[in-house]
Amino acid sequence: MNPRTVKHAGLALAIYLAVFLVAYLEFPRRWLGASVDLLPALFVYVGTSCGLAATAGLAILGGVLHDSLSANPLGVSILPLFLVGAAVWSNKHNLLNEQRFAQVSLGLIASAAAPLISLFLLYVLGAQPLIGWISLWQWLAMALAGALMAPVWFGVFHRLDRALFYPAASESGFRPDRELDRGRS
Image (tube, rainbow, N blue to C red; front, side, top):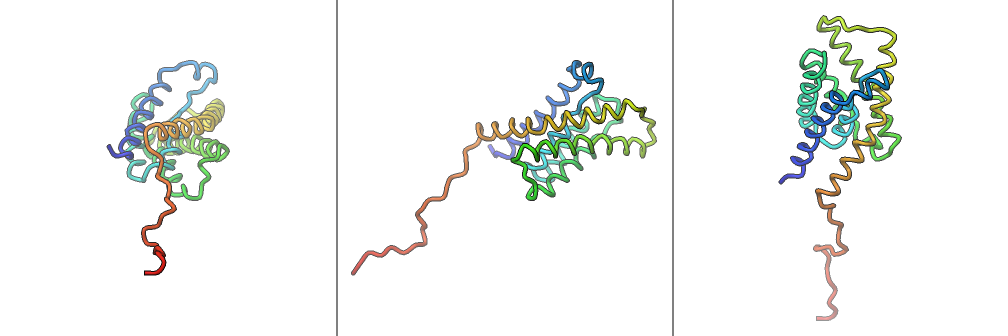
């Protein structure tokens, strides 16, 4: 089986589980007074490890699943998730994504940007979302939760990669194009 297919299937399963856990678990909402969203932090990892087409497909899956269990119109969450993943994907060679500080920072930025993009899309679609001072606390709690979850996603998927796939073979000291000196003939 192709390793990319296994990775994409694992990411799709993680998206499903993240949406399910956010909808099922009530104690974060009760303790924080805000609902957390685990998907933007996951899409930081998706942007660093997948191509743009896979990021788009996973954003469609995650957006539809998230919107089906929230008050959002169906499809509103697709674009914010895709933009987070695409922004990370386009800069993945410049990012220090193996560093914890970079993972936390990217998770914070992604989890802060995705709700703002969703809010903008809701206004463009003519919806009237309820915004008040408590919304600032909810946005902050969501951003901090994403900052904490980004290193968790990276850790989980790096462990799965090590468990499921062989490491790349190291280069041998033997070069097939070298000449051997066999002495006098």
